[in-house]
Length: 215
Image (cartoon, rainbow, N blue to C red):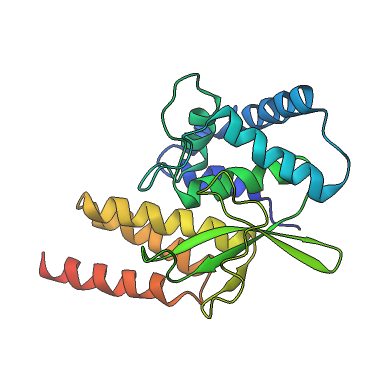
C-alpha cells in the first residue's frame, strides 16, 4: 500500500492526541480550493507547483521562521490564520508544501542536507519533471528552482517516510528538552524505524539513553 504522507504526517504531528487528526485533511483541501480559485493554475506540473509556492508566500510574506513550527497541524493553522506571524521552519514548510502537492496529485521528494547556510541540518522539496529536477527552497520567497544546493556533497534524496521521520525526531528533541524522557524515546524509536539510515537519529537515542541512566 502506498505511504499516505498526509495521514502519517498528521499522526506524527499529533503524537499526544491522534484523535484530533480529523479536520486537518479538510483544512488542506480548503487551502487547495483557495489556491485554485485565486490563481486558476495551469495543469502543467512545474508551472502549477511554482504558482502554489508563490501563492503561499504572497498569502504569508513572513512565513519562514527559524525555530518555528514543524508539525503539520501547526503550520496548517498558521497558514490559514489572518495574522502576520510566521508559519514554520524549513521542516514545517516542506511538510506543508509536499502535503499540498500530494493533495493535488503531484508527487515530490525531499532533499536533506547535513549543513546548509552554516546553520546545521536543513531540508527542502525536490520536484522531478521529465529529465530535470527542480529544487524548491522554502525559506525564501525566491526559492523555487533554487540552484545553490545542487553541488552539496551531503545532499540526500528522501521520500515521504523520511520526511515524517524528521517530525518524530523533532518531537523527540522537544520532549527531551522538557525532561519527558520516556516520551522522547518513543519518538526517536519511530524516527529510526522510518529512516534507519539516518545516523543522527541513532545518536539522539544514545544520548537519551545515557541521560536516562544518570537520572
